[in-house]
Length: 103
Image (cartoon, rainbow, N blue to C red; front, side, top):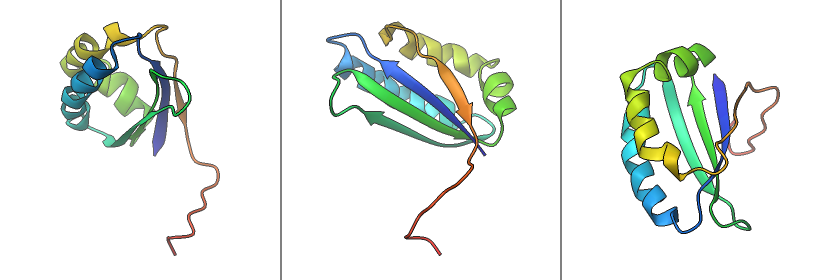
């Protein structure tokens, strides 16, 4: 499993429109091969700042599968005009995980 991480800074005054567009975009990315899960978190201190976390089966599923697909063009059209600056996307893999609620 690979975790995609991106800080999304939404232009001032466009948070509501961004939320509406993102609700549509979720359906696009969720239908992509290798997609596992998505979380969009909003900063409690900085208005307009969000953290996007997407789990993929592999980096290739994200970079070649999703980004090289027609679905990504739809994703871009819905979302990319909201960001300033454009987000830096990074990929991570787990080194250590602790969850006291799971055996």
